[in-house]
Image 1 (cartoon, rainbow, N blue to C red):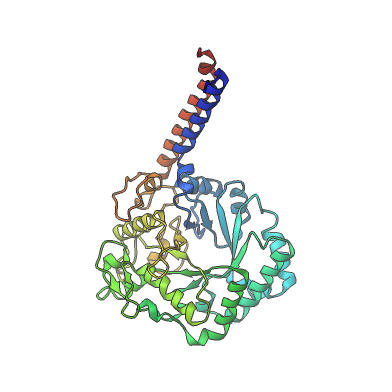
Image 2: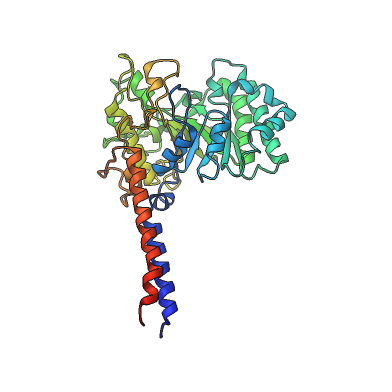
Length: 404
């Protein structure tokens, strides 16, 4: 076969373009860590503007984020960013949004003006409603979810945006061993209605799961390596003989068993929040920078490996880490203000190891190459992009001069 001069030029340019795509961090990341998102809280008086935040999220290779409201500035900043965004209806709105007309007005005001430019994929109707101090909210939850979903149907957005409500693992009466997972009996009626809605609309069950709290409450009985994903002997469920080498997966499987006992074992379980504080009060055992770094580094590795739990090993677990920033205005103990991966000035609170996102290794315990700051990640990626674009443009000048 004889190639013409023009064919060689075309083949070379295709080769260069493929080379460009292979070295840009975002292209390499999309297919390798699709199951990790970040919670972007905003309870602080010194946080960077949303326009800066979206650049930070993209620079560390993440494609999913969750916010705890429908802040217009955030929704606008995320437009055309290709980052999937979950928004939240505050708990105090649930009673109002039981009304279908109110829900339609809410969706028209808070979702429709921004979608699809802002890739809103989910609406969290409240957060941890089942364990909220205001026990009346439980009665408003499912009616509000139904009304919001109906509004999406009416506006033909339901095929793009799911409706759900994250729970805390406090909804479980029993969680150890995982096969004993059982919802609290007083929640049976409303939980059944809640799960029926999720099943009908094909939405997942989201749970906020924090091994940190279990360790803090009982450090003498719970092995630190087990909760941090570090190498350890783990535990074997005595009833089904499944082996667990970390508590997060055990918590997830306990929820799956609880769902099965309710007749909804087919629901997918996802983690809407998990994290570890880097600082705490003297009574908050385990809240250290070292433990926070270990937990989140190991979580990151597991997500890159697309792992499933022992009960569902072939189904990768979607996890949203908590949180992007330390938030100085959050109430409660010191730990509540120190879950962030980053300080508000964009420096790392500790080194999570984001460069692993661009590494070919998928072993849960491999040594990771650490980066010093998000700005460095962005700068290196930008230099690579500029270099390859220059190579590509130069090919237009050089190749026509080649004599074949």
